[in-house]
Amino acid sequence: MLEQLAVVLESDGAVHWGQWMRKARAHLLNGDAYGVEYLLSAYGGMSSLNDLVLGQSFVAGVFAWKPGHVELNERFDALRDEAATLAYAIKRAQD
Image (cartoon, rainbow, N blue to C red; front, side):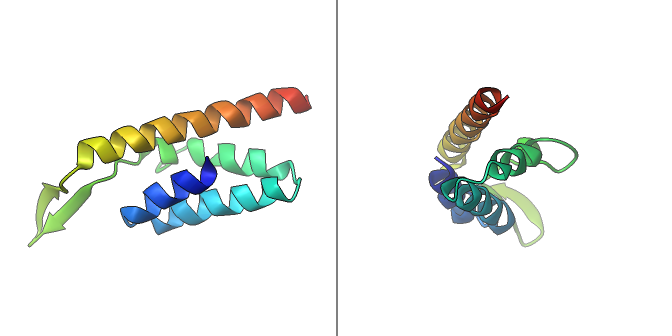
């Protein structure tokens, strides 16, 4: 799930968030429960993963939507929501 999310993010140039997902994934693959907290920390506060909208660009200083932006954001939203749902489920199981 997190690898797919990273690929979608990076495909639109959101490298920072892609790397965030890969780091969370690496923690989880190593059996490090911190990966759940790290992942969930991406969802809160200003300029969080929740605020991100993909498929935007500026062409000659003018805002434009990239082709396929609706489908890209639908995929991103689904992956983002599923990652959070799974992270919260893991967190509940640990408590």
